[in-house]
Image (cartoon, rainbow, N blue to C red):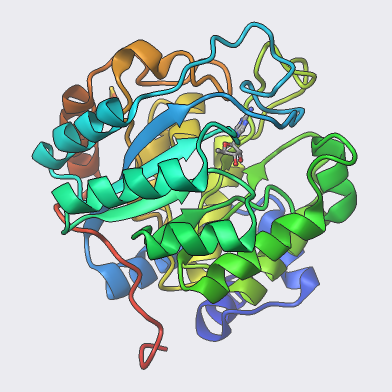
Length: 351
Ligand code: 5AD
Ligand code: FES
């Protein structure tokens, strides 16, 4: 298998059969070799630096009804909240003091947050923190809307594709609500406008097959996103998928390494979901090729309400506590958290 891993590192491409073999159970030696090559590539491009992004979960109202997600429209048990502009700015101020230079505004698809309100908010954040990047993670919108938000100063956009397989997409989302093709159109629009774009999938979501994962990897090759967010699917008790099995840390970590070799310069978070299913999940992710962490900056009183999945970690801790905790965890891996926007290295001249 080491020849296949070398080929992936060298050519950033494999045949479907080779991808399938890399996703099947590996010997401990191959497993180790894969993560070593992924770390080598990550260190060649980004050194030992770990970038942190302050996640601000600013609304859990959502017009969608994704079967996996705890803030889906039909979940009457979700306690809905919206942060005010003042609260969001105050999260940014706290975050800035703690060394964050990227703020991620994440929320459900909430009609209250019109372009006008969001543009004002982005401009305000940029006025106070000109040296920071603003990332949006607010779902599907029109191209015009994405354009306005970009013009207001947003730098990056996260929109996970969830799965690259159309039939699988339809197993995860109610019919006639979200469509696979529209999701991909949004990602293409975002790229065209000039955002640094992040896509990504859940690992082990119900109905996911090996073939779905291969399609996910092919989609990453095609889109060449600047960021890729992946995490295990974790069942949420108030959703139609409450009784489904979750994804595994081992598969998530494996995919992180494969993605690092596929897209050597990608910004790759070791996610909170991975840290939720394994107490050392985030460290394992970093040691498999990830180079980003996204701790929560949301006010502690709303953290539990942004329950996309069960048993989410860090819902009781203040932002400062998480930063301290993470600094120690990162140090244990030999990497270090840096104070930086952590932009994508443009590919020019680097391959
Ligand atoms: N388990 C894991 N990840 C989830 N997400 C939503 N619900 C779950 C869940 N139950 C992920 C989706 C979404 C991101 C914000 O959170 O991939 O894009
Ligand atoms: Fe939040 Fe450890 S990162 S408590």
